[in-house]
Length: 223
Image (cartoon, one colour):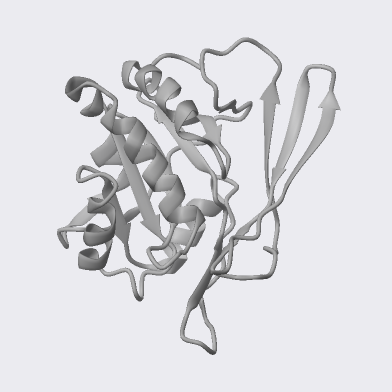
């Protein structure tokens, strides 16, 4: 099975800052990602989180799509007041998407029920033509029955992702019928205090990191 091609470049920006350039992830492809990379800065200061603290706190995208019940879903309004983990991907992805969502699901199950209710996990499809609400629900249920799946206008999805420094390319159907959707593979965590992204998790983040950080996110602890 083809693996996801992804690269991470680390470069020093200053004595107190570290710049990480996150390349695109070509799910289902043997080739590397292309396009502009998202850039974040991690300040070298104490933080309770094991994820990367963002120097720039991105606004939660103003995005209206369709949820897995077929109803309109306003990302900002309907996750307001909750810590929110946001990930862009697609259900046909053979590697990074199910791995990432599965790891988050394992960590979420370790939370007490009351804390789970305070964290929204949102998966936005980068392949809406194939990811219908029913397909999304079936796929997400194996990882977290409370996970929110959103699908709809790809141009809206691309614009929302771009506002966070995440690049998404149009899906490509390969000769063998498989689909390649090239997208940024990072997870952003938004805090309820200001509805902005404060913590980033790169592709390959392990379950232990999510297990450590989710209780902090549930409590809305500042990064």
